[in-house]
Length: 326
Image (cartoon, rainbow, N blue to C red; front, side):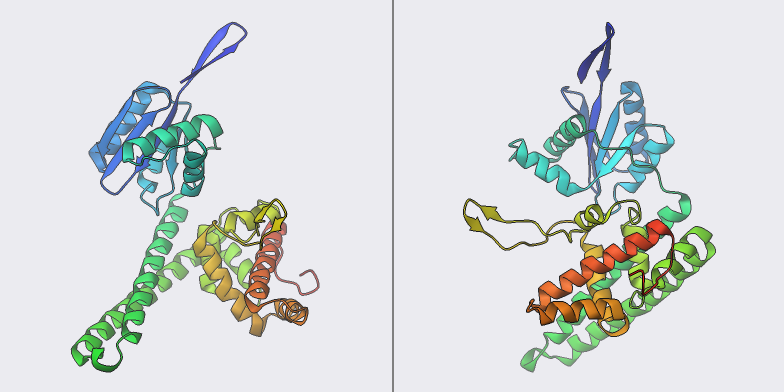
């Protein structure tokens, strides 16, 4: 807790960090011994709200943990507790910068609380019910795709004496089940988007770009809500498509991209490949880079960056795809 002096008055600010896991909620207060561990269930969430209400914190910070943080965000928002959800990479970088090497849930909570006090990130608004449901459905879709890819990789690895009929049939049944579940989930996502005028308008706007299909549009809608609110450099850095220098002294290293939101970057890669066939602007840009001698990977990454820039500008201006403007 930091005392702040203003016109003779002392304002004590309280910053709380919460480490969210599947089983537990570890929380700590910066500059204080207050905190503890609670079960990540209904009783634990209510106990967390009660304890935080007594503290009247200035800010509570959580890490984004693949959806596990959403129930915590929901109950704290309803209880009018100021809360911010931040990228875990920010916390890890902050921990390294402050020399924290040890790692336990309790220490993670203290580090998050320290981050809250030092950085004071903006509050995270609680998504509307429709948005929250769509986000959870999309998270489940990504899980299904991950499992489907894993099973297909296992099947392709069964060659020669390893290709036992019993194992092959087992993997094929799992693949068929996952594909059916994925199709069912896609239909549900489509139905919910069409029933929401706001989401339907955004979806139609993004899909007006040749090469951008429903999968890309939905990923951008749910995993990149900042699209259209940032400038082109900020949105590229957020996704992880802004190249960073690797220079030291007289050594000039190769620029590379890293970090950011992997799910968005993966989907933009697939969309850029589709744009090679259907989008004349991206195709011409790619051909120009290849003619200039750029490696295929570099040219394709540049196309991903350009596609993201175009989509960001379209959403910001609320205008559909136009070749001349692009």
